[in-house]
Length: 194
Image (cartoon, rainbow, N blue to C red):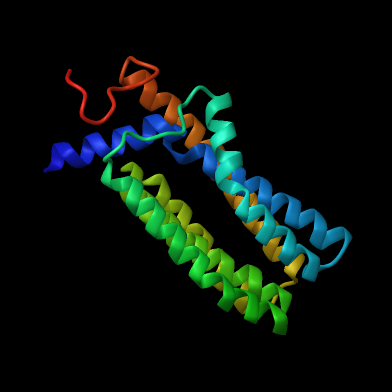
């Protein structure tokens, strides 16, 4: 069973650049929301992040392909369903975050840091990488700490962008090391013979 899990994780890493492309796409969405919060309003930044969040997957796929990954896992990989399930959980959590944002825009971003942090913890299993434990916990810690400090919405959304950007760069570096360690730009996909 462990070999099957490792093969599924390797297939996801090969297809999605170890998830780094998705983190980078998310960092871009948070960065746009940061600009909107700073130069327009926190309320508009909520909508910017909601719209940007809806574009994370297609932009992540584009980034994957630009970096040489297929952005398509092998059919039958059980972790594809896990990724989909975690996406539904994220979407189902958004109304609660939005309701909090109606009371205080900073609370929307704090809640989103917690929600997204929780989703990244699932990615630790999806990709078999400790990076996602660190990312998920960093986002959650930021969400709690910034809420406790009652900082502005601009500060919270900026923190989200910065954390995601740092981890996107770390993910790119780790993926490149993983590829070198496997002596192949495309390690064996799930179900292939060696």
